[in-house]
Amino acid sequence: MDAVIEAEGQGPSTQASHVYDRLREDLLSGRLAPSRKLQMRFLTEAYQTGQTPLREALNRLTADGLVEVREQRGFYVKDISRAELAELTKTRCWVEALALRESMKAATPQWEERLVLAQHRLSRAPRSLSATTFEDNPEWERLHRIYHRVLIDNCGSQSLIAFCGQLADQLYRYRRLSIRKAFPSRAVGDEHAAIVQAVLNADVDGAITRLTAHYQRTADVILQDETIFPELKANGGEG
Amino acid sequence: MDAVIEAEGQGPSTQASHVYDRLREDLLSGRLAPSRKLQMRFLTEAYQTGQTPLREALNRLTADGLVEVREQRGFYVKDISRAELAELTKTRCWVEALALRESMKAATPQWEERLVLAQHRLSRAPRSLSATTFEDNPEWERLHRIYHRVLIDNCGSQSLIAFCGQLADQLYRYRRLSIRKAFPSRAVGDEHAAIVQAVLNADVDGAITRLTAHYQRTADVILQDETIFPELKANGGEG
DNA sequence: ATCAATCATAATTTATAAATTTTATGTTTC
DNA sequence: GAAACATAAAATTTATAAATTATGATTGAT
Image (cartoon, rainbow over all chains, first blue to last red):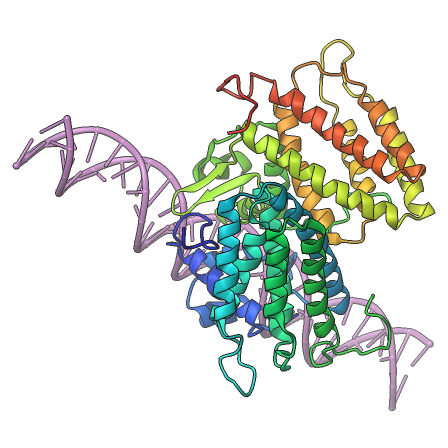
């Protein structure tokens, strides 16, 4: 009942699963930079493992949209672009609106309680580890992830939930890449609370509006971050 | 401009891609039966290739939802169930309704022409190779796939299109597994034409209603097929 | 003399074969 | 009859070999 996210299946006892987790973390954090080539020799030395488990992990990560594979030419960290960020955000808004609507249609007291709990825990975790400069707090990120997961959890479709998870991961990477800027100016905590309030009020349209606005605002901040997007033309961001 | 589906990327020149295609076909056709164990020794002999390309193919197929992997216990053909069929269908209706709506919002003459053409070609292909008994026509299946792809093609989200493709594949397998029954009784051609007509009339709700009814009818036929679902209780199929 | 094309070399990805580790099975013992 | 051990089967991993692509130099032409 506690591990809301980790409940995917078996405990990872193979080396492939282990290196998958490590690679995933390094991709999401940006330690492995976008469009970087992932050479086998480098990977085997850096992660101290053989080619087979690495290949397995890289293939799974390709399915997750974090790695790109070119035939006979090796693996690459998926590149980023304003256009992709915009498209992913648009898609997430569409799909999570759908999932949230269905979750609310099927609402139960148990689900509402899980949601209230997830939001409460998130609100108690500090956004940044440091008070002066922004320093990413892994625990906040974990609770944030769970919160958004619970929101759509009740929709009744495992495949839809999984798809939302993929989109969340891909967008999370953008957020991490852009996170140095101190944007705790936004009161994201209030936004999370307002969404839950709308859900509890059975206000479907209100909940969806707040949720999609939440995602759109996050994307807008990142889209303006000139440090992660090299080319800076004065267009709307649609490539 | 011709290959609407195949436009995924590079030509498959590796053995891994080749065996992926062959495995995929055998999974979709049912030659590899649901829940069957996929032993390495059997696979290497049957497909005349090594373990590395096979592992790579199996991992990709796992992401496609056609294969299941259990840690330290090998690969299995994904099992089928009434519950999963119902859930996949439900999800496909939701997501394709969304994609169709957005496609129609962004409609262009070029897209409408592609749609008309796809429907026309489909209407000209014979549903069955034999006139008396039902015999699956691969060309019809190919054109059918393209038709449904074009319908949602214009939504402006690659990831959403890819997700729809995954759902389509998984449901296609159910259809193939159940296809022996002669159900050309249904006038699916008329259904396809009616959807296109609604699209051309800019009748969003009408198009969506027809499309989802189309999918639901297909699922209902398969759900009643006792030959592929062993347990037959007199419940609705949820569980 | 400069540029393009071709050939040879080096680096890297992909595939095969062998070894290791883990799980499943059947027998024996308590 | 249940638990523990030994054996067998199978998945996972490492190590080695083959095929492909990238790189750089040399040759020929403009």
